[in-house]
Image (cartoon, rainbow, N blue to C red; front, side):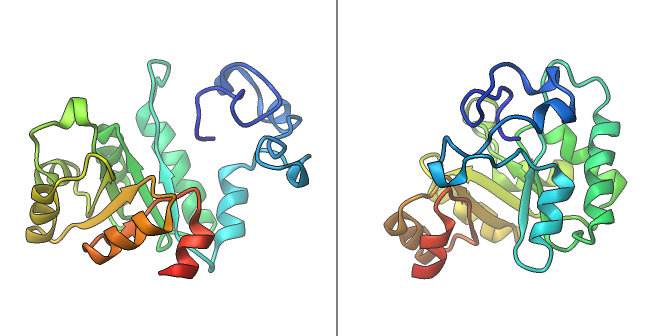
Length: 195
């Protein structure tokens, strides 16, 4: 689930952490997008990985907040699902909370990791320094925050470079031509067809 709360993308309200899986599965998670998706349910990570296996890469953004008591157990459970679904070579673990990626690195360094740049926390730090701290091979940045110096540094240090959120075909083409390795989008079908 992307958001901390349910109201933007489901028929319910409140923090996701306050509900059991059984309760979450009762909410409609499709009508907000289009009426033809009414009745869709929130998938578990295993359900997403099973559906994606062999068809595409999955970017799993690890999120943290004040209520996360055991980062190691959280990351281990995510990685356990990835391994059980046979997706270790088809996922990217990414996070704004770089400490979670450090935990992932110690648990299974073979699963690719991507540091997500936070302008307020990471300003002035190069992609290579941020990635080196946690053994990441990917630098992820908002398209509006991406600078030529970041692209240069990532290239000089062999980092893959991903940009988000690119929803226009024109923006995606421009950045792809500029050397971006990956595009994170809400409009992937149109972008994949056009590039």
